[in-house]
Image (tube, rainbow, N blue to C red; front, side, top):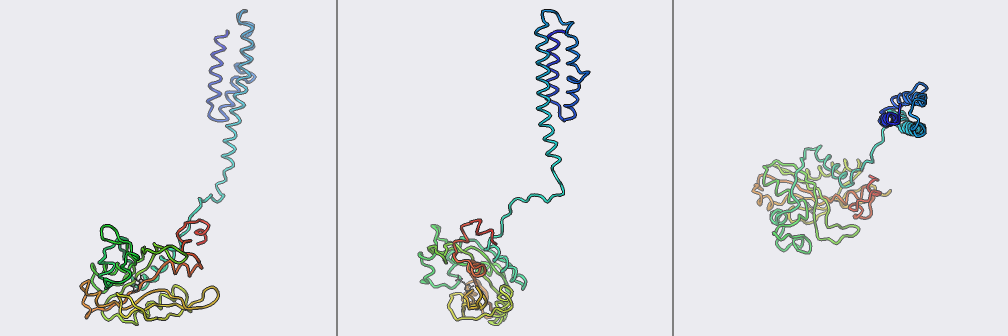
Length: 328
Ligand code: DAH
């Protein structure tokens, strides 16, 4: 036995101790080198055979190796057992940790509920783009050239000559242009107006449009449909009333109020615009006004959401403050 051989043992011992993959393997390394019949005690026992000039160095080196190996094994024991402890601490029967979930936006909720109610009585969902032609948004809806809503003060025009739709009514025009009666649709979607944002106005808001066209559709159908909707949406006790109004695309036209309890007392609240489709609109989409009649309606979704949830400021709906949104 000499210093060179001792160095070789040192390299093997340290490598094996460093690489032992489990606590058991590490223990085997410890026994192999440091155990009572291990390699290091054996090396010590051979001290007398080491050449005389190497003896002092050899003794020191052997001792140093023993300490080094003992230290390394101790340290690795600590990490290996802590892995085991962690694994033991995992209890598969405990409920898992859920990542925080978002909640449905009140606008989406109200839209979904309105859609569900109308689908249950045979309406299908139609869609149209946010960027519309002047024809679909105004002309085909019988809106006179000098109607104030056409004003650049009220509607966003694009350089192309198109505009951002100011209501969902152009979906009526699109749908009638591509389908033959009978038709029964609702069309939820975004609308845009040049409004200065305040507690009740937003330049970007949502509406749901409704349209029913067939032979002999009457005011009674309109009333019955809206009364059914009101009861489904707000409960059996709700009442509805029609107030005469004007819209270019319906004749006669109405504003419709619902009477229901809000904040502890019942009162009339304006909910939507509606009417019988104006024959002029039918002519624009090549429907024969002598053959078909229809009703249409449009309601603001923000307004409904604010009423239902007691939201005082429309801007709360767009700020995406989690403290607000997580309440729904
Ligand atoms: N488009 C109207 C608005 O934005 C709402 C409306 C009223 C839609 C009457 C209709 C309707 O379809 O018949 O104020």
